[in-house]
Amino acid sequence: MTRHPTEAMHAEAAGRGARVVLGTGLAPGISSLLARLGADRVGNVESVKVGVMLSVGDTYGPASRAYLLEEIASRYAVCIEGREVTARPFGGYARIDFPPPLGRRTAYLFPFSDQVFFPQTLGARTALSRLALEPSWLGALLAMLVRLRVTAMLGRRSGAEERVLRLNAWLRRRYAGRDWYGVAVEVEGGRGRVRASLVGRGQATATAIGAAAVVRALAEGEVEEAGIWLAEEVVAPQSFFGHLAARGLVPTVEETLEGSHTARHGKGGSFSVGP
Image (cartoon, rainbow, N blue to C red; front, side, top):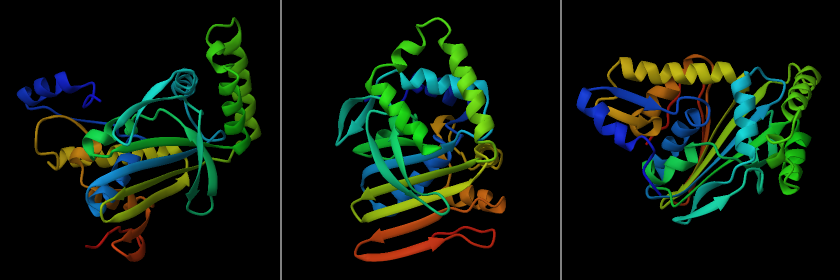
């Protein structure tokens, strides 16, 4: 698998002294730094598994809707035990435990781009990202439509886009106010396992706070080397999550390392993970 599609631009940016950080949203972005946090604890990384939950009743723009419709009909490549394997969005699922009040959710394979980079940036032999939807029946419906190959025909049929827009508008009215989101990342490696999770309301706000934390890292000189980077390569989890915690976004971290188990919860507007 290639390092990432900006490799040619990396040398140009470095030559000009530019510092560019990609992947500053929810996934990639917050998911990437949760993965970095775990990778720093487990030694040689075997796997990184990301679960994202999004709510239909949340606020999002037309670009997000178009992205979902485009990606759901396309196959993509994932890394499984060091091999590149073709996957299909919503073609497989797993049960993922998010912190309260979300609880256990069914999450489906989805081509979030963080999983593309983890084999290179974190050395993961396996990297998978999954998407859970609220209401839960919507994810099950999309999985069924994928199996029936209905989603592949949406972009080709006349009037399909208009019908999707009407359905989307109805769903947003029906589930208005149900705007919870969640990100849960599990990293396994030579010294054990780390699960790091974050839940809240209003994913757009969380995305903006995460992006601001990356901008702050750039402005304060935390990204020392010029070039084009992924967030998990150059942004320190400690300062990143400290910035999020100051805005009320505090991750839950659970560790099972070398036979001992601890659970750490950031509190009181600060976040730390001890040695």
